[in-house]
Image 1 (tube, rainbow, N blue to C red):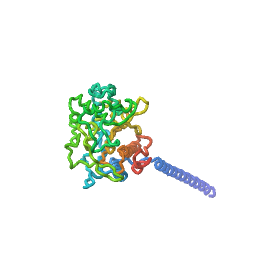
Image 2: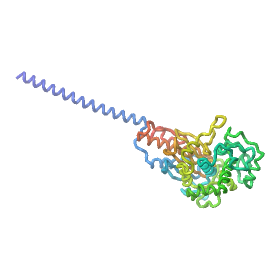
Image 3: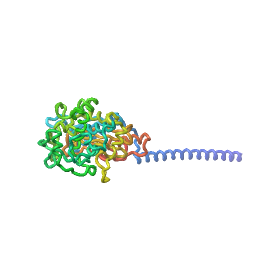
Length: 429
C-alpha cells in the first residue's frame, strides 16, 4: 500500500514537473515574441520607416501648403505652380491675388509675364537646328548671321547661348537698371551699328555675364535661317504646333481680363511694376506672356524630344567648362545645376518666375518638370528659392515612397529649400 502511494506520488511529481517545464517554454516563447515585437517597433520608430505609402493627395496637400507658406514668408502677391513626373500631372494649383487693387484672385487660367523664360524658345530652336545638322555650336555665329560687328566675328554660337560671349548690352540703362523710359535703337541694323566700336567686356569663353544682346543675336540668326521675323518663327515652330493658345510674344493681344498685374518690391510692400516697351526685335529675350499650362506643355514637348532628340539634349545639357577651368552658369542656354543625383536645367523669368526640368542619366524616365509663376513679392524673393522649396517637398515625398516600397534603403531627410515642416526632417509621414 505504501509502495503504491509512493509510486503514484512519483508519477504526479513527474507530471507536475513536465507541466511546469511546458509552461516555462510557453512563457519563454511569449516573452521572446514580446521582446521581438518591441525591438521591431523601436527600430521602425528610430529609422523613420513610413507606416504607409504616400498618396498623390498627400503631395497635393503639402504643395498647396507650401504655396501658402511662401506667400506669407515672402509676401508673394499671386502664384501658380504645376509639377509633372514622366508626363503625369502631380500638382496644379494657384494661390494669392492676380491684382491687389481691386482685388482679384489668381486662377489656373491667369496669364503671367514670363520675361526671360522667352529665351528658352530661342535656345530650343537653336538646339533643334544643331540636332538637324544645320548649325554647329562651335562655329562662329557670323557664319550664319551676316552684319555682326567685326569684333564679334569669331564668337561661337555656344558662347552666345551660354552668355560667355563678352558682348556688351545693346541698350543704355540708368545705373544698370531697366526703366520705362529706356531708349532702344530702331532696328537690328542700328543695334549692331551702335555696338561696332564698343569693346568686348572680356575674352569670349573666359567668363559668364548675362546680357540680352546674346539672345538678340540668336533670335536674329533664327530669323535669317528661316527668312522670317523671329516672332513669326516662334509662332510657326513652337506656339502653333503645340497649340499654346494662351501664349503671346509681346503684350498686343493679351486679354486683360485674365492677365495678372506685375508687382515689384517697395520697402517691404508691393507696387505695380512699370512696364518696359520692348521693341519687337527683342521678343527673343523678353515679353513672353503665358500660363502655367502652356509652359508645362512646352517643357513636356522639349523633354519628350519633339524639337531636338533626347540623346542630343542630354549630351548638350552639360555644365559649361570655361577656358579658365571654372564652370559657367549655363548649359546650351539653359541654366544648369545638380541636386541629389538629378541634373537641373531651366530658366528664370524676371527673378519672379522659373521653369525647371530634373533628370538623371536620360530623359526616358524619372523626369520632373516644375513651372512656378508669380507676379512679384514684397520681399523680392528670387525664383530659384521658390523652385527649390518645391523640389524639397517633391523629392522628399518621392524618396519616402521609394523607401516604403523597398526601392531605396534610406529615406531622404531634409532637402534644401523646403521648410522642415513640409519635408518631415529624415522621417516620412
